[in-house]
Image 1: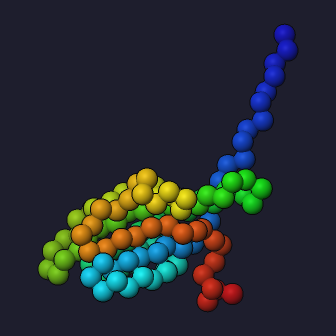
Image 2: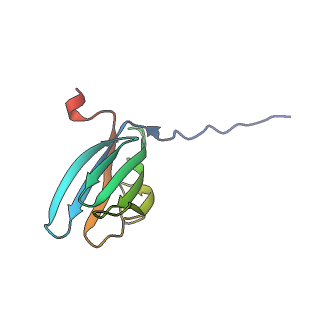
Image 3: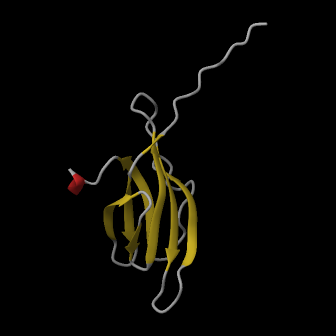
Length: 117
């Protein structure tokens, strides 16, 4: 009996930092922020946690994806989870945060924040 094993596709590799772009719809300000995996940052009333960030190797079709948990915390209230899931850089509308004031989407994954050197 001959067993043929197909090669496994090269999968995305986890990275230490997610590059996110944010939009405040009230002020029309767009910012790019670097968030370390496993940490939470505040953007307006949102708490954004990056749990995982993957990027395909350079020899494959470019794609970055991050698993985000986004909660809204109003003053004097407990945070309320508004989004949890994967966001893809190539298709930001595929699984987007739906919020009346803020937009958040993934741009890239990388190994370190610029200040890390």
